[in-house]
Image 1 (tube, rainbow, N blue to C red):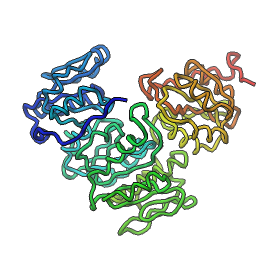
Image 2: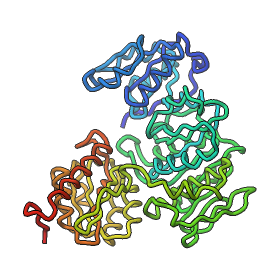
Image 3: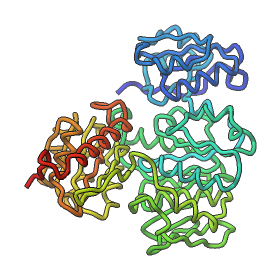
Image 4: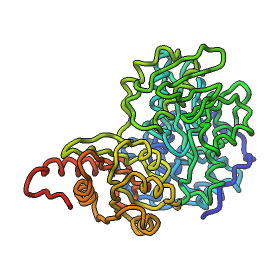
Length: 477
């Protein structure tokens, strides 16, 4: 594991209040890096964009960059970093040597999200945790739309946070709802959400973070600049989240699907009960939710609590809940045929996310899992499979590791491609059951990202549906 970047205060004066003619280096030309380049260039900065990838791999991004930006590809040049006035990183950039050298030379280093947060004049809401961030972030945005204020929803999903800075949402009356990953939070210094949601915590990204302690510390930075006028929304069912409350300056509100909480929101039988400071209790029927699973009830409660704290009238949100069907690649129902249901949960890139999705499924299932191993244990997944799964089809680099840890739990099968995995899984399942892609691993061994993996699953399901009932298709006994 590489040495972490030092975030001690820089000896150089702050440059984020006046970017004109400042030499700013943007590291990594992904979605966030491109947004940072556009914003900085628009503010008159002398921008150097650097990426170790080649031009052929970045053609689309490079085509969208403003004129006048200096581009350095193929390698990072140390002189570029140490001679800068400011270095801005994309979330995916690890703590490379050049960043540490920049800090050693007194150059401030910050993530794109930190940069954006310094120019947001309106209300910032941050959503973090290991699982459920995107669903909660988007639903929270839908609820806040009812206020009629300028709104931006993005960050770690959708549009990068810098993209909001040229919109009314960044102005004094606006609201910005940001999904924030551990990579983004690790390099924050002044980011200050009015409402910070921490959904849950389990092992993830241990291929980049040195250990669980470093991962937790990065996540907890979402609260670092909050004060007594702010709110922290925490999961009362998660022991690690409960323990955080003792260290916070912000006012704490809770959500739970296991027990009653106050202030906050909780599930009481089939009713979601919301009890917030200075407000009458609101009761909403769970049947309003169209997103499946108990884990999504928790996500909805977190969003409802945060929205209520911001002034949303929770008595008037039934219409929002009843039309929100969730997000692509997150337990997305992609077909029903041969008596089987097919679910695309490609966004389950860690064990905790897969466990949450599968625990909320009411059917027995055949699981398709695997990809690139992220350093965690599969023990929690094994417990869910022992109770609910008919079989597991493994694919990708992690298949041998998963096979060893899941041995003796359920029947295990191997596949080389997504097409082969879907054919095999659908042959193993029996009518009334489900076939679920919930990989518990990242996608980068076989696919460019989880979206591409999810689309490959959709395509494979469509192909099986086309062959169902023909001589080409035979169910495995």
